[in-house]
Amino acid sequence: MSSSIQGARLRETSTIDIGHGALLYVEGLTVSFDGFRALDDLSLQIDEGELRCLIGPNGAGKTTLMDVITGKTRPDSGRVFLGTDIDLTRLREHEIATVGIGRKFQKPTVFEKHDVLENLELALRGPKGVWRSLLGGLSAEARDRIVEVAETVGLIEELSRPAGELSHGQKQWLEIGILLAQDPKLLLVDEPVAGMTPAEVERTGELLVSLAGEHTVVVVEHDMDFVRSIARKVTVLHQGRVLAEGPMERIQADPAVIEVYLGE
Amino acid sequence: MNEIQLGRRPIQSRRQWIAFLVIFAVGAVGVPVLNLAVPEDSFFYVPNYIVPLVGKYLCFAMVALALDLIWGFAGILSLGHGVFFAAGGYAMGMHLMRVIGREGVYASDLPDFMVFLDWKELPWWWWGSEHFAFAAVAALAVPGLLAFAFGWFAFRSRISGVYFSIITQALTFAMMLLFFRNETGFGGNNGLTDFKRILGFSLQSETTRVGLFVASVTALSGAYLLCRWIVSSKLGRVLRAVRDAEQRALFSGYDTFYFKLFVWTVSGVLCGLAGALYVPQVGIINPGELQPANSIEMAIWVAVGGRGTLFGPLVGATLVNTAKSVLTVAAPDLWLYFLGALFVGVTLWLPAGLVGLRLPKAWRRKREPAPGGRE
Image 1 (cartoon, rainbow over the protein chains, first blue to last red):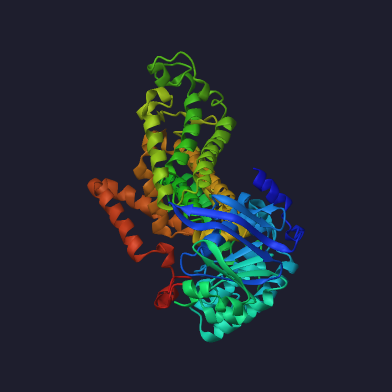
Image 2: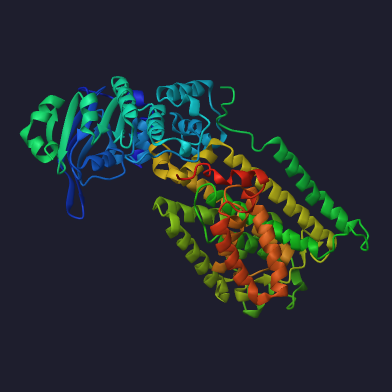
């Protein structure tokens, strides 16, 4: 029950104590599935306002790391902190969302039968309890916020369309919009440009770059051209560990990285 | 931007309100008048046997409504709603047994089956059942608590999908075995029957039956509006979100556990109410109501009528039960084949149920991809 107390105390994302500038702090994280070490003593630090790209071959542990941060998977050992005082390994999924972490899945996951407007409404930051949902209305402020988010992700013309009717790229954007409506500190974005046209890829890149600063963005991506176009700092994962970290140019020149990943 | 409508929405459109009020008036005023005030040789006369029969369908319709609330909206298929229906039914049946007084076969203060079992005094779980108010509260509270407890453990363990359905089947089966035992103290396989009166009115009298009928119409209408009210709120949209993409709902900050538990419990309570109204109208409650097949039939009513519409299941329950009443007399052996074929047919060709058919316009639209369907 201590987790829900902590969750209640930290309902406001603005109270995150950044301390030394690290928004997300991962230390010694190990996760095993049936003897396979998906994450092996992984340590990582993401600063506030950063746009970080996470790359690595299949099975490097990228998605598992996301799963641990968002509470979907519990680590065998290690620590994951948001700011200096929120222990994410002790919170449940919805509490982690409430303290300010939004996640975009690899496969676009939106509410297909709800229209775009309802998708954003459900995501909107605010009371998420049973009674408030049953009895509550929506403030003018909230409406403005929805319109603002819809404009940001280019879906303002589609507000009344069911999400299931959107194109693949639009669904990806809607999912990013859902994240934005949550007003998170940290956005975890898993393969945002998979299946997009070149024009859509470019717009998505601009969008993510514009979000960094105000938000902290972590992008997992396979498309190296895309990573090159947006990345300032790249972390390469391999076999559940950090293989290399630094600016893209240096990463590309790193022999170890070339061997396991880029060289393929 | 004026069309943006968020938070709570109107529970139904103006046309739906008019239709609702017309149907309510026919049920609550029309039927009683046509039964009690119209001469028997009139064309408009509603025969006596029709009143409790339709009253029974109304109770089944309420069960279908309750089931649709969780299946159609939250995507939780229960194949054990007979448990909550029977719990409400037994709570009312116990009261009706007690108010028989000494008019039973053994002229005892105890219900006949207890005398037969040679019990000397009332077991504790029958205490209070002589009061109607107690029974009325118990008929809602017992299924509600049962649903809450079951839901608590099932949803906490994140049991979902077909596993959840199977466990609910097991629940109703286990309850049936329990209630078949004489020692359980609910009349064993005979159940509770031979009721004489309710609230002092004779159950044989035509006016009492009409009164129970009107009570059923009113309860069903209230339950329908309650469900509409629930699904037209933001909570209704969260439920559909849980149904379609629970992970996304969790990562949007909703503790889906409480949403499921809430609507599951409401559904259980509505079923209990249906059971409590059913028992005085049919005059008996026994463990047969707990048969797994009964609960499956309930799901068929919903599927036939149209899931996720609230109105469809009312139609489905009424039509399927009318067909049952006719067919089990005309060709008793064929009923189960018919039911099975109906279920298969509806699943294959009418996934949206009967109300999915409604207008010619819907036919014309058929070629376009279904709204929200997968491409």
